[in-house]
Image 1 (cartoon, rainbow, N blue to C red):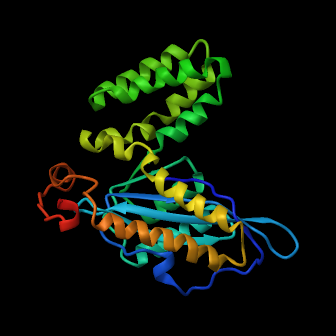
Image 2: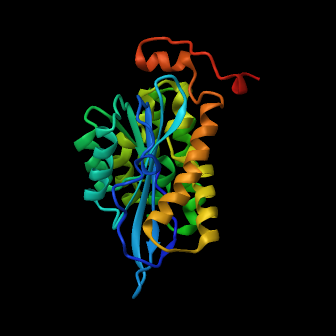
Image 3: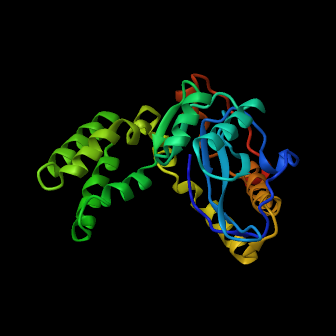
Length: 276
């Protein structure tokens, strides 16, 4: 699950109603991977306050990406995340094998409460930012390069062994960093329990960057939104365009690699536009 923050301003504190379910929540399905993104600003008549915008994308059992949902709320707390995930489950979200996100405690708790049996992957990019906050700027490049050697390992055993070697190498000079790595090992290396062919797509939220940048570009053009529903309409239109594009593009995961996860092989013909 990928999390990003965008700044928008609203001229009304009005909360979104329960209409427009297609705009806020994409179709369900049987996703392998599940992601989300947030944050906007709301401007009531008197002052500016924050409002959270969250979205979820997934990869289906046949390997195509799709938009799963979008919602707007007053804050990015655990209650809002729980409500959002429950709404997706109530509309048919099932079979989620992995969630990739940053280490937001409210989100993690919501995942555990609504998606039992799902593996959680801590985004390696967000982890790296957190890790570098514990070292002097002069050492940041060296530390980052050393940690990245973990992700260059060809198998799960090599990645775990290298992670521990790297943590131990920092223990004398950067003890707090070593502790952070000890605590995060299982979550950051969760990707290693999946096929090697999927690692680059699931170990971080980077695949969402293009979509997030386009949303930010569109919302920055508007500047001030009259109400939360206007954010849903604009962001929803961007997501609808992306969803349609994904339906005719090359599959994100191959049928062969998915068979290693699902235990079954299904060769699904690609759309003509993607087969050219």
